[in-house]
Structure formats: structure tokens, C-alpha cells
Amino acid sequence: MPGVLGLYIGMEVFIALSSVIGNVMVVWAVRINRSLRDTTIYFIVSLALADIAVGALVIPLAITISIGLKTHFYSCLLVACTVLVLTQSSILALLAIAIDRYLRVKIPMRHLHWKTNWKTKILWEEHHFFCSVIRCYKRVVTPKRAGTAVVVCWMVAIVVGLTPMLGWNNLKKLRQTNGTVGADLLVTCEFENVISMEYMVYFNFFGWVLPPLILMLFIYTEIFYMIHKQLNKKVTANQTDPTRYYGKELKLAKSLALVLFLFAVSWLPLHILNCITLFCPSCDNSMCLLYVAILLSHGNSAVNPIVYAFRIKKFRNAFVKIWKQYVCCSEDPRADNRPSFRIDSKDRRLRHNDI
Image 1 (cartoon, rainbow, N blue to C red):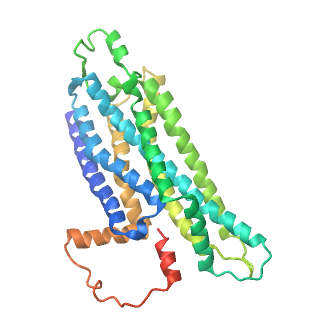
Image 2 (cartoon, helix red, strand yellow; image 1 turned 30 degrees about the vertical axis):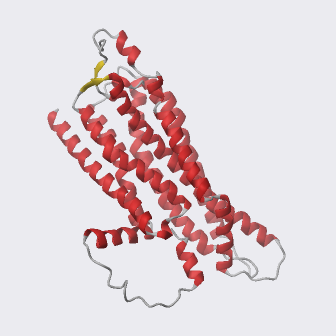
Image 3 (spheres, rainbow, N blue to C red; image 1 turned 135 degrees about the vertical axis):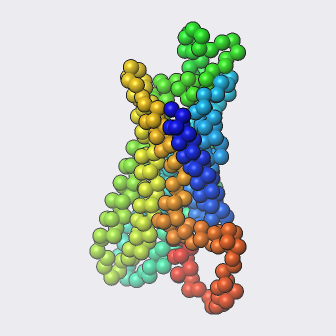
């Protein structure tokens, strides 16, 4: 199927370029926009770095594998494990984002409950509530803890992804098959040739892909429930109105839940094909179907910047700024003509914390 293979390689090249350019812009946007330097952004940047590696490293290697190149067994295995490490780091980054958003909603609810249970005659203004809950959240989710969480995610991903290098692979199986591999350990470099399907299904999918996805589904369900509960709550005169805060959190939670949904849609078909390969050895998986599943999984690395651009205003503004100043080489004429008046502190704080 040279025509199908050529189309597959062309699509892979397009996805690789889109992934690298889009996710470099995400990292660049965080670099030039201080208001994007929130703890959640630590995990978004980690996700973007993994997606850059997919576009710059994994996809070129996948194209090499698709042409049936003969390589040393462990060289091919290392290529396959690299894909697994980056996939696992993306899953754990998404889980960390979900937990972070949960804390961002849950901590203010505890603070609000504590405050409204006291019989007080003080009327709290909205920005007092906002600033106090943000302080509570930042005391729990500090930049140091967020950075530590990112490091832990990558360490776990490396351990999970490199497990086949420690022995859970197909080398013994290939040696038992006459003529498949010689003393020089040269094999046709294909994913299924070197990676054990038992590892992919029982350990990787059932152990480290499906449980985090299910957990994230429950977390986002709980987030939406808590937010809608607060938005539908009637507020009396001596209570804080949290509508603006929770409205922003609802909008961002929807955007990040969309990122999770797209990840699941992109990666589950490939894992389902792995399950079919393991549980139904006699079933013939079409190469076209396999190529589509691989393209879906790689394509996920290119879609996140699009979601950020359309769903998160600060990312969209940063992307436009990068395009105008660094691609079109045009300066913003308003930059030198801005009035020097001082922005109201309340609005400044609200805008700074509105990702």
C-alpha cells in the first residue's frame, strides 16, 4: 500500500510541524505574559513540552518505523519506550491539572462556608472575597509544590514508560520464533515486534491510562457539580456573592475538560486495537485502521494550542501578540500611547488571576 503509506507520512509531517509550532507558542506565551504564570500553567507547560517532543522526536521516529527499517532490537525498543514515556507524562499532567482545578474550586468553598457560618454584620465586597480565597489557594498550591508535582509526574512517566527496557518485552518471544532474530539482534523495527502486548494492555492501559482517565472524569464531574451548586445558590445581603469567581472557574474548567476529552478520543482507539491484538490473535487488524489510530494519537499533540487559543482569552491575546510582533514584525501602536493612569487595584487583581 505505497499510496496509503505516502498519505500517512504526509499527515505525520503536517501534524509534527503543527505540534511543534503550536506548543512552542504556548511556552512562548507563558514566557512573555506574566499573568499566565499561574500554578496550573506549570502543568500546561509540562504538557506542551511533551507535545513538542512528540512532534520533534516521536513522529520522525514513527515515520522511520513505518518504512520497515531494520535496527538493533534495543534501539527499536528505546524508540517505542520514548513514545510511552511522553504519553504517560501527558496523562499525569492532565491528572495534575484536574486536581489543581479541583483545589481551586474546593478551597474557596471551604473558605466561603466558614465565613458565612459566622453571624456577622460586616458586608464583604466581592474583591475582598476574591483576594482572600486566592490567598488560601496559594498557601496550599505553592509554585514549589507545583514544580515538585511536575517533576514527580515525569519521574513516574519515565519509570512506567521504560519498564520494557528492564525485560518486559518481546525479545524472548522473538528468539523462540525461528529466523525472527539472530545473534546480532537485528529486527524489523515495528512497535508490536518489540513491545509486549501483555505489558501494553495489562500494565500500561489497565494500570496507568484507564484509571487516571476515570479518576479525571470523576474529578471534573465533581468540579462542575460544586460550581453549579454555588452559582445556583441564593445570596443574602450579609453573604459574599461568589458568582464572578465561580463563573471564571467554570469557563476554564470547561476548556481543560475539553483538552481531557480530546486526549481520550485520540488515544483510546489505539489502546482498543492493542486489546483486540492481545485478546483476539486471529483477528486481522487493517493497516489503514492502525494508521488512523496512530494519526489520532499523534494529532492530539497539535490540538491543545488550538483549544487554548479559542477558549482561553489570555492565551489568545498572547498568540496574537507573538504573531504581530515576532512574525509580522509590527509593533503595537497603542503601546506608546497608553494613558498613565493607575488601574483600579480590584480590577487588576481580578484580571491577573483570570487565566
